[in-house]
Length: 144
Image 1: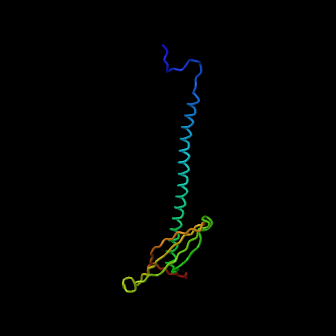
Image 2: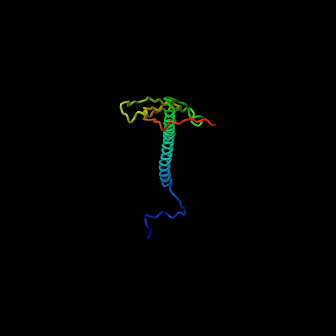
Image 3: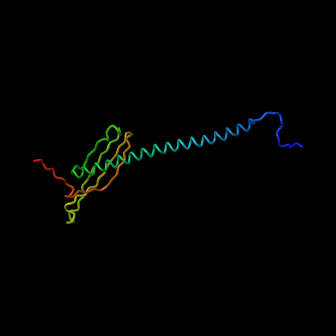
């Protein structure tokens, strides 16, 4: 007794055109999802790398500002050389005073604004406080 669910025995084996098209549609959909995820991850990586570089350069600007304040330079600026073309840094410091507090007479406090400008003209600023005291100053001794 023959079953109606079996194929006719004509001697040909393989897939029907409909089965091949369904398989290609599933494969195409999967590839679309994978390529889309790849390019989204790549865009996120590039954005994150730019943010990390910007934050690192801003931290360098803060360090240069603190060193400048310790040398009693209340403003300064410059660039980062050929490795980061178009990036510029600057800082401005304003002295804050508390002359009425006898414990803080030797300490000088500053409000500092450090600014990082990128090659596209956008700038990021960070405002912080810094201080110098007599222990931070260095003396230059001449060799005898």
